[in-house]
Image (cartoon, rainbow, N blue to C red; front, side, top):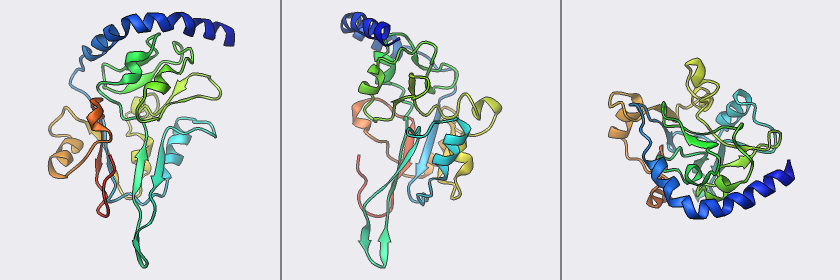
Length: 223
């Protein structure tokens, strides 16, 4: 398997160099049928309890040593006794213009036309790691058991398939996470975006991420 994968990567390298721009145009031409799922992480409500991480791991059978979702705690902000912390959600941004989709030589990385969710088909993935190298958010990893690329999929194959919200949303004790259809002006997420100031991480890259963040009330927002 290791040898054939190496041979595949070698052969596909030249093809990608020639057809890379074609891949971008094809990916950007995809249309979504009125549904583009997104998420809001309210940093002013997040307490860093990591219940979302535990729920994600349990529902999606994520092995130890890797994670689809990480909550990063900042350095202390302020002085004792008024010390605050910012909690930053690190996970797939489900970009409308996803570099990981553009570089994938087999079509394993794709943007689902029914939901707008960026996902991975493990049956097509050869583990070349091009998607991992191209992701500016550094949220992809090689599944230690399947040896294929993996990441957050908004629980597309688990909770969403059963008509439930993503595991992280259901487990959050402070309701810091909001999930829904960005293309529905009456959805909870759209109404919240219309009312609250938000930012998106590394927006200047043109990836058009669908994870929004209500900024932390203390200190500066790092983008």
